[in-house]
Length: 484
Image 1 (cartoon, rainbow, N blue to C red):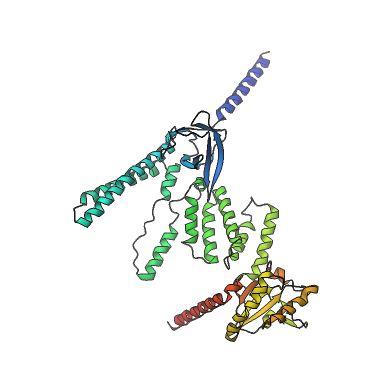
Image 2: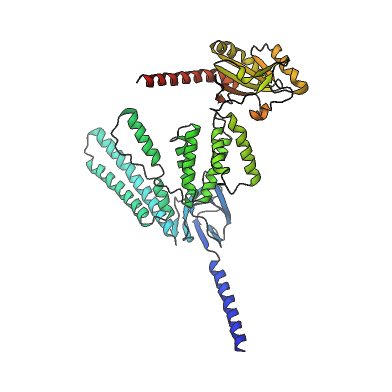
């Protein structure tokens, strides 16, 4: 009997424990909003996510101006938004890992919500209030100082007040960062700390280069890219974009090096790592900038083909790898694949048989609307550049019974350069040169190295001129180095 009672008691304790556990875990998130003068019954909760602002939930008021968001699982840390209809005015609030039960109260017409129950939001609110107040005072002092200097008045008192004001704001910022380093408020404040560039013993271009390199190297010193909360802040995408577009040389190798640098720092924050890996791949896969397909290929090899993107399905991964392998042989700097084409009479013409300083390899079709205008339009280009060592090899993409149309068109338009094709597609040139549309233009040097590709036909003259100037400039620089 005693054994039976003990088991029953144990069962009751067991049930009570799990009921208590379930109740204790319920609504671990409880955020209340009390908004005066807000007439609408709907409020949107959102959050920053890289370059986007996403919707978390739509809240319906419990009473006029009162909203509540409850959830039994914690929110991801970061900066969130309460957005009001119909004008889309919004307030920002902080969500950290531990502190997700708090209240925000204020006027819809005000510029901030007063928090209670959240140290993080209290720090953010008080700091922003200080910035707003001191910002107004600072503007007034600046006006007095500028006017005083014009009139020759002593403004040393105002200048000291200005310094004291700046020191006060900095002191408060340092206090938050040092005493609450894990807070979202500290995360935001640190992102705005400027980079102090040391004095370098150099002048001119050397000095500028040293300053630039220091700035770039230390650009993310105050932003921990391994912190998952960084993805849900309003500053991260702006900083990443500036780093990639302003601090990185816009050359495929340099761009990939910067991508690799960032992703290595983000690897311990899986969500941010996934977001930016996908963002970079999509950006450079779809770029129209000449040569940027090399970035796509480098990313596939370094990340996708190396098992570093577990979120990608096998089917998608296979497509990425296949696309990358198609692009590799025709990247800028590679030797153009050697293919044999045929003239109208069946005479073979290999690309490497073309003996010229530069070869324009252009794939076209007489049924392509753009080609009908672009191909005859290149006659002026040919007349100008052919005497300077530029040859055109025009590869018509028509085959089988339409093969003859290529040469009929060339005769009709009096095309002066070499027109060839492959009637039975034995060379597989469409796949080899990734000809998915026409016209498709490649510029090759004497050794048939790809100098440029996907060149717009309407800009071919301009681009050819710029290319030759650049080549000549590099040649002169090399000669200069050799003499030194």
